[in-house]
Length: 245
Length: 307
Image (cartoon, each protein chain N blue to C red):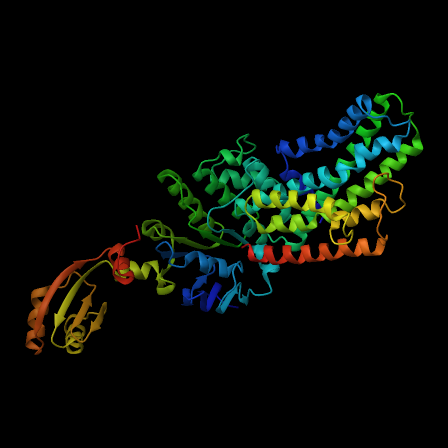
């Protein structure tokens, strides 16, 4: 499995867009910096700043969209250039193949959120009115890691859809709908959509401003939602890959 | 132990209402080159895919290395190298990088395996050219390099010379021949180009509309389709007896009740005619024929489509 994951990273060589996307991890920290520099005031509370730089749109839109595009890119070459039959006769197990892609998404997601965390800390310091505090930084890193890991699982449906498609357009379009639905559905029912379930888990202690849930909090239900979507996605991927010969 | 590396038994593939492959029995002998010849869409690729387990069979069996391949794919695949249709690789990587990936996936331990494979097909090692910039011929060569990378016992090559220039075709033909002769590889190769198959294959299977029309050794086919005398007589059985007794003829075949095909061109036709008439056999016609393999293939497949 480790070999397959290494190979997945080798395949990303010269795909500069994958690494450019990593820079989008700094978009929200930078926008938060501008927002608090020229419009609002943090009142010295770093969590107020982190809410905008790492937890808000990053959690619901930026990271899911980036991971959706990455998932599509990971599946694109082999589907587009009819490479799968060459892989199957190596032989490469279909499920190992799928999970190697998933682990790349997971690693990328964690790295993305770590970049977001580092960016948030740097921009919060540049802002001037937030004092550097290890406790807050560790809180930020812990939450970013949680988001990074759980979002990768929540994006399994997109990875599965990408296995069924030869092109970019449909999986990317579905990614956008999926991400926006996640942020909309969270106010209706938090346990239908994996991304809103992820928000429940991340904000379980009510320690992220703006993500204070008004509905009944059930962490097992949130995990169950992500789990069920994950299982369905794996089954879909298995069927799709079995048909791709 | 079976002498066949590949043996199919009543192999059939049905797509919806269409029989793409119909009860095909092919026999690929160990250490020989088997050419599967047929027009585009005749069913060659489907047969190869079924042999590799890449597509399911509607009915019939595929034995590879003496055993049914079903459920044994993982044990068998490392012993096979294959190109099916146009080989695809990662366009953002060079040829060497692409082969390194496949070498890693296969766990190829031989040092210089990638370099050797590239050398055999005439591609440069550690070249900076990306696969996306390759010509069709280079792509095909890289596909062949990938197929031979892990030194497999059996090669399954689906139209491997597609897109190659004439010199490239000759080079590929030479090294496929070498792989069989010098290294004892068993090779199943498909093509719609008769000359390619006739120059390369030891055994040949002719397929048309999913049906295997003929399976024979190339030697036998050439013998059958060289120069011959076509004799039309009133009684072919009686004529054959006369020819055997009076002329010691053994190389002939009786096509029907009135037609004989004689492969000994040195026979004196005047004497033959005289002997037959004296033996109470009327000679309707006798003519010297010179069929080429191409004529033969056209005849049995019923038309054009094989170059």
